[in-house]
Image 1 (cartoon, rainbow over the protein chains, first blue to last red):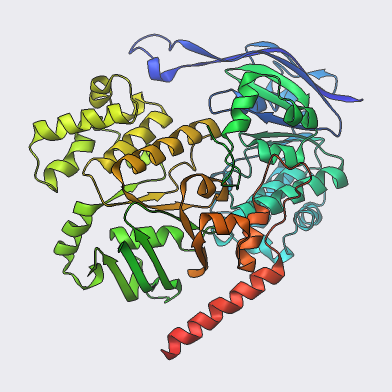
Image 2 (cartoon, chains in turn cyan, red):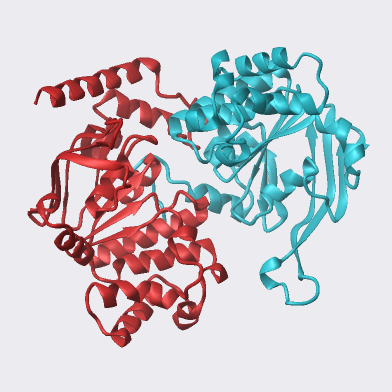
Length: 266
Length: 290
């Protein structure tokens, strides 16, 4: 399979501001402690773990919103681990991100049309309005929504705007960080169905970060389980659910409350 | 007899007059755990807030009764209403980060209620707080009582809020999506803790959630809401054996189930939305003529 991402021995530490002394630097806290995996073109990878497991940090290092402190991130043959902003600029349009909270990641003073157009302007796309119209159509929002403000939309619709903005540049890769955890089950199902269709229609590669394994099962072909900055299990989705190997994976699975009063939940 | 009984409660947005609750009736018996389920905007949180007398200023109650131990709260003068609610009800809030005052230590945040509303002396309130923290399995309660909220983890803060809710031995606790902000493993611990405390203290619980998985674990009965209208009111066993309302069935079908590899998540279908919207319109028409 054609490899789009390769991550090798990735380390990332951040200053721990909770323990910063009055003078001098804050002690550093290791978030990622040597993570390695590869991601094939067209693949949908689930990244799962509890809070503090490093899953969001890993995602942010992949799209270089954070700079790793060790190891390598290779995107489509280019080492982007320590690439500077000028070097990243032409690559940025090829990897996009959908954020967790659409309320805080969409500018409340901008209309939907402006929000989706912003990255297109930034990257000097020729026909912005046609691309915006196309992106809105892809996510199933009527064209007149371009004139609305984020607060006039429901949670599910706002998340569609976030998706439209991410796909407007026709990227190769999208990172989706907990994008359905704030939604009702019905909107959640709609957004997941939409994402699945877009992956097929646009030939996207997707990394889907979630703490909810039932959502992962629905969407992903392979799963990476993170715990305290390390990969504790990597498996095809079917295998992971049929026979989880790591104790932490089983713990995550057992913690999910199934809609079934007979489930033993010890 | 039911400790809490809500009869035909109607609430709307001031000014615009947009209905928030449309003729809501439900009852919670002593020691019962009732789930309030629905999508955002269904009014599930508003019911809890109405019972506790903490509705947003923009929302007004325009009809119905809220009977707490047989007394209609809506007919009481405000001061008496607050005392009555404060003495017998408590809240477990959604967000453990914003519910605690960041600039105060934990101890006074638990004891204030006991001192101000129940008139306990400080020493008795403090010893009660210490016992409660031990009861919610917080190691070293004395250290935690002196700590500020930012020094504690999210799971720890949620434990403190649970302890605090049980502090005055309330008859009814409203839990407003208490685990939505937590990850699954912490959610499990917190839910088990709430269930354990509820059983030990025999408290009635109104549990607001959008997660039917959670309902199946902690509730005895549930009320399903859509657009401020009760669409189903049943016990948990019969609900999960097969909900009687089409909307409830659709909601259950949309709930992910990791054990079923073939389960394709189905959003609530348009036809079901139209059916339940028609019921909402009919309820509004009845309200306008009655």
